[in-house]
Length: 234
Image: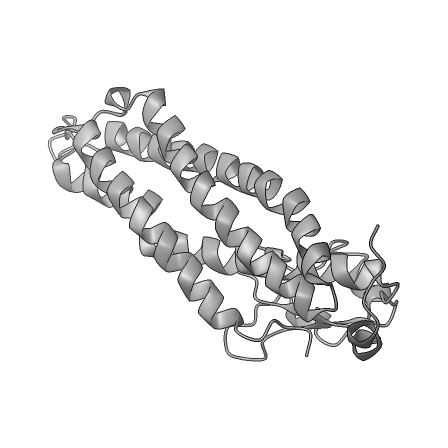
């Protein structure tokens, strides 16, 4: 099996740890927005601090998942550590930067909607504390965190596996893409199920995830041989 042995547990741990952080950030954002809420009340320092705390936690989580995936796909402990040293922090920076940028976009879109809302009389309808809570829940709530956890667990799983298998010379054009084969499989990934690298790499060159919330994985043709013959240290 190309999927790491406890993928669901690792994804749940990822979501739980990040949600604890975002719960604090959600409460602070509600307070900063004020009543009536105004996005001008939210300083850039809030986003910087939010990004910093997320980065620290996510880098550790990506390292944990990536290290396990590399070792389960034939890497030695030393090789797996070398991989995560190169992978976890850059990926965490990239991921958190995108997360914060999109968070700001969500808040600005909500602000525009507040400005466009009018009373039946046609007069402006000022936003309320409920509006501040709603947008803060959207930005820092469990649904968005859950999508992050699923996506980044898949990303670290694939990155660790690809690094280990490639080091051992085991990557093959016949490595297969697999979905989780359940009711959540999307229209993007369903056509890729059980297709070889020679096909799926044309559309998703780096492998899963193919999109946010993707839970797919790769099944390696030469995995048994790779596991029996550890890769040479580069």
